[in-house]
Image (cartoon, rainbow, N blue to C red):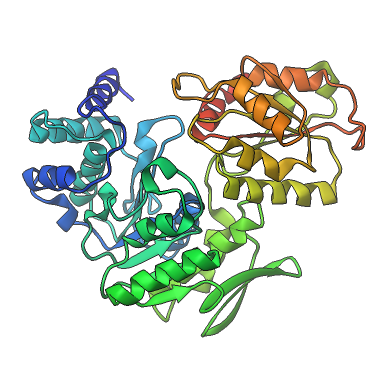
Length: 447
């Protein structure tokens, strides 16, 4: 990103005193001044939910591009560069590439000028910029991820998407969305629109009931996981099932049992969007090629310092999961790995201070040998390592602190053998925040 683009983004963060202020009035006003680019987009698949949104989009993008569609995507937050949030599909690259620095700078300048310095949140004005970029670049489909909630999220200005999707809903961002899953479900259900099919991922009973109640009131037809479709593993294959029958497919490339659910949601969307002739070959290619960094991403352990690891490097995983539902999915994956190859599990964790750290860590009480708490660089609202260690103590897991991820890995390399595991090299999960994950990826060449 150019220095001028970076300075411009910094300026935009100061246009509103609050980082998050849900509502549609400000973004609608700006979009009107820009000539309503949101009305000149390719068909939109709108994706809300607490967990799995990005993975569903990754699978769906891979399937759609394999079927010959030019695919735009809008996701957040970014890991390293802001440009990652806006990817533009083209005839030369169907699955899309991050917006160029020059186009980003041009569009951000247009949005800043049209806004007239009026109060608007950073997400609202950058969403308007994304819509402007998408409207100026021909494509066949736009995969649009909700930023926060649904009903009052800036992306919900789209009046008639092709499909609305709600991935698993759980507690997160309670200060904005409510303290009960039913309240959060109502916010997520706000993306459902009359005449637009709604594809619903696996949900708890109370969440599903709330979404169904909203859909009935709004006249929305739902396609519900566990009732209308599902996905499961059988004999090392992925089986997708709906009212049209069974499809035998390869297992998803993305690791973790929860990715079977995300893959099933993506296939349901792909079949709904592509129609009766949905390509099985495109589904296979999508499952095998989907890429989504910092979601149980395997890092090269041989790059980690420590002489004890030079011949037998550790197994290192990176994930940005940060709420109890994500913690459960990660713990389930670590348990599956432990069943195959026993290794002592260490968590290197940094979190933002509005997250349920005890709820997250409680998922690992029978798995983790030790937790090493680290700060998140350049995040003033990051949780102090002291507080993470206190939470670890409360759930009964040994913990210590390190000044950064590299120091944490060094400390692990100097640890003695675990009394409860075989003495093989460690299994390390770096987790707790996408901000931390982005920092790790940006500096991974140093690890």
